Image 1 (tube, rainbow, N blue to C red):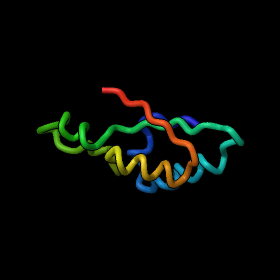
Image 2 (cartoon, rainbow, N blue to C red):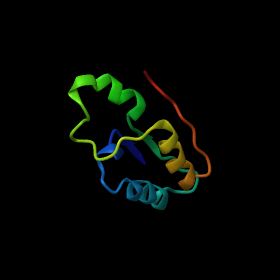
Image 3 (cartoon, rainbow, N blue to C red):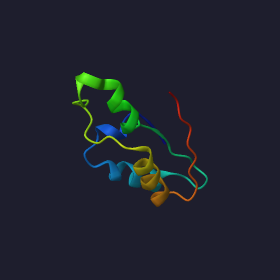
Length: 79
């Protein structure tokens, strides 16, 4: 399951994680990306919050949400 830059647009983002877990075959992978709120907000500066984002994750919150659902989680970051 791949969801690039989607989860932050959803009001019910836990449902995306739950559905990804439900449909994954054994050994499958959920590849998901989202902006890091701690950096993204600073980059937007005077523009303010993105009006299309229902929820922006800090790194710690995103890690907590994924590790609660999946036994193995790896992170790759970009700047």
